[in-house]
Length: 146
Image (cartoon, rainbow, N blue to C red; front, side, top):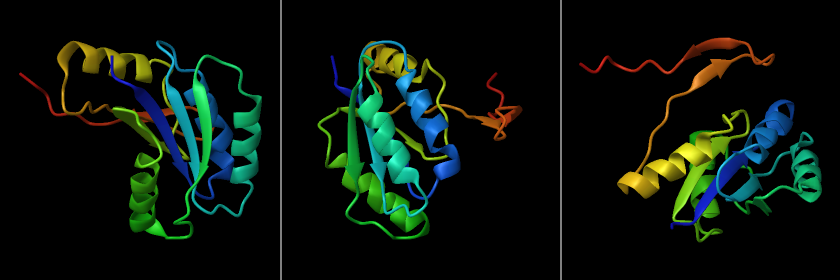
């Protein structure tokens, strides 16, 4: 069986961090490695990540990372952050989310099932969009497949 990890990359997302991490901790299925990585936050995000990682007692392995390429803005900064994080794990499959994303509890279980059953090069998933009160706003539009 392959080794699986879930990666949270965040920078200055204090409003969303706790909910994002909780969604990772609620993953069902086989235990996975959970990587909580920050890239130079100055808004309290690091404190939340540290406290949540320290207090976690579930089945998954949790590691806290601080990206040394902190401070790069926009997509180039996020790409640098993700690339650096990939050097910090030996997982065969990494499921990434950003600091303002929340995962369904079945994400890792379904991703693992797809990789184990079909051995694809990648698995893509759609998104549900919610507001800060977790009210449904829509979902990823997919073309009809006939």
